Length: 272
Image (cartoon, rainbow, N blue to C red; front, side):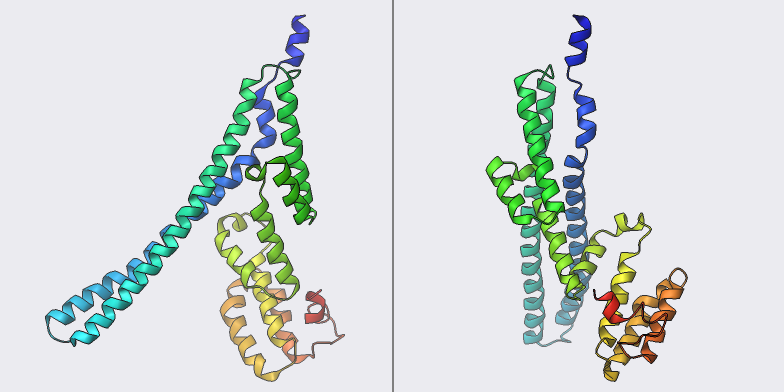
């Protein structure tokens, strides 16, 4: 009897080992949101405080006409209003993240209220977990609309990462069209995580931008491509020298070249 009780007793700690990612992403989103707030405030502070100091000094010493002072103050007020709008947006995002975290914590806390694996409440909780995993699999497989519909029907939208996957799929689609701006923005927001990866995504995106500049064979674009390479590719010369030298050699070949190794690095190859 004791052995049977032990085998059916629910160990919530072991169960939660499988669900760590459920809380990890909201934590990362909250951290990123805070970083955005700090970055925006610092940028505006660096502009407004010196500008206000200079304006005050100029107005008190009659070095600046009143209409110029008013124009400067209007510009600062406009920037502060823009800052307020950005802060309101970020604050709303923060509330949504906290609400999502709260619901996920509540979902996990339910495990501690279930004494046994044979309890009907555990069956209900497991069904929710299964629905979560199905939605996650559908998102990873590209069935976004079906995943959204299932999440709505099961009322588990706060327990799945719909927005993150939608953003990633949007970035991937734009990359297939040769657009790298959103992907580079994502790299900037996730620098800490990317440093742990052996794959240098930002370099690959900058290289793709370089390739797009010379894709048409327009000589006028080559100057822009060389300036781009100097600014964005040369910092990687120690770790990506082969790719950089190969990219430089592409300037001497047409886009449809069959010559090795530039065929491998040709725009048509990387664009697929």
